[in-house]
Structure formats: structure tokens, C-alpha cells
Length: 324
Image 1 (cartoon, rainbow, N blue to C red):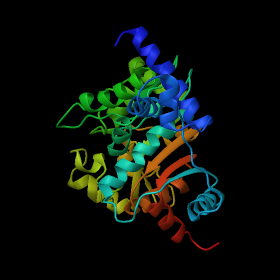
Image 2 (cartoon, rainbow, N blue to C red):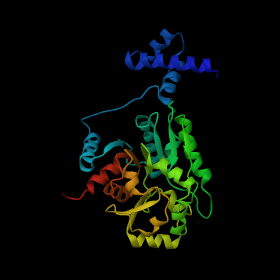
Image 3 (cartoon, helix red, strand yellow):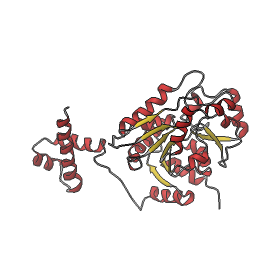
Image 4 (cartoon, one colour):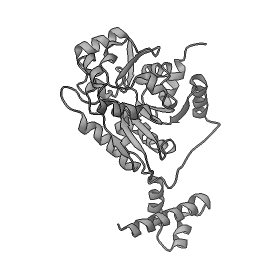
């Protein structure tokens, strides 16, 4: 399609959307007014929704989901978006539905002149497949943690996630070409002093938004760090001995949010939580009740400002809320 043709389609989609959503005309009436077919109007409305020209939001102060959302916000002091998903939905489909909703919601949080940090993993990968294009300027996406291990550099995997986000928001991207975990903490400390590495770390330190899923050793849908060859038998034993319940960007934590003395974190390349907590908006996307222990630990650590979660998981979170 030529630029002129693309512009005509956008104008027609905007006209159809105004008539349908703001003036309550039927598709038949719009088709008559625009001298086209009903099926063409249907396609224009779908185009308007899929490209972000139309943003549909549902707010109900009466239903149980709204009350649950308010309860979590009050208990934890965070913003919450609850995604209704049928109880019978499989955990894989549940993740896809939550990530589809998250991709739409991100439109509210990402704007021009921002630096956005991305933690690779199953959740952010799924979100990247559903992004709605939004024309912005001076946006940069930065990889939060290395993706390499002794089987792969991780560059292809991480770069594909970054590319999808950069393409959707007309942005640039910055890879972090280091392993997920160093073999020796001293090697990490030495590399962190290098100017090339410091440049990426400085970009991370200036983030406006961080987007991440929560890694969990208990999840029904396995977190990528636990199945991608990043951890060996000794690592698992070390995590179990330390009482780890989850990770954000391959930095591990306990149920009470503590993390500093977990041995594997000395070799991890994800952001220190003190730095992460200085990021104004920290969006966690969570699907599946098996991730509730990880979610509770992340909340205890103060890592989350905005939570996007399915309804069943949100209910389990509040059912397990300790008594005051």
C-alpha cells in the first residue's frame, strides 16, 4: 500500500470509529454514509482497534473484580489491572491472554522521550507478540540482564524481543551482551568497570519504565531462566538452601523480599534492586496462581508499582494475605 493509500485507510478508519463509537450509528448506517459495504466498515473498525486508533476501556465499580482490584491497591499501594480469564483456561492460554491485555495496556505507560527497561523471559516474549504500534520519538528500550549461558550467547533471543518493542514504538534498542550469570563474581566486577558495560548500566539507571515478568521455580508454565540451561544442579541446591521464591531479571529474592546475601546474585547480571526501585514505573505482568509466592516476594521487596494479573491469581494473592 502506498503512503497515500495508508493515509486514506487511517482517515476512513477514524471516520468509521467516530460514527460507530461516538455517534452510535450502526455499521449499516455507516456503510450507507461512507458509500461502501458493511463488511468494509467492519474491517475499518477492526483496523482502528488493532492499530490503537481506538482504545476501549471497561470500568465497572459494581463487580467483584473491581472490588478485588481496590483491595490489592489498598493492601500493597500499587496500581492494578485485573484481566478476567475463565477458571477452566489452561495456564499456557492464561499467560497469552494476560500478555495480550498487557500489550494493550502498555500504550498508556510508554510515551516519547522515555527509556524503557525490558527483562527477557516467557512473559515479556509473549507481550512482544501482541504489541499495538504507536508512533513515538526518542524512545529507547534497554535490555536489563544478560541472556547468555554455556549453550548460547542469548543474543538472538533477546534481540528479537527488543526488536519487536522498538518496531512497535518507533524506538531504538540497546542490547546487554553479557551472560545471565558469570562463573566468577570477580569477572562480573571487572567487566562492570569497563566503559562499554558502564554505558549500558548508565542507561538502565535512567529508566522511566521497567517491564518484567516474575521468574518462579514453582510455575506451571516454566520461567525461561529455569528451563533454558542457565542453572545447574548446584545452582538449584543453592537457591533452595537460600529460600528463594522467585526472581526479577535473574536477580533472586526470598518471600520477605530480601536478596542481598543470596550467593547466586553475586554472579547475576540483572539490576540491583536498589537501582530498580528508583525507576518511577515498574510494571510486573503475572499469570497463574502458581506464581503467587513469587508475586508476594516481589511485593515485599517493593519492586512493583503497577501489576497486570489474571483474576484467579489476584484472588489467590488476597486469600493468602496475612492477617493484620
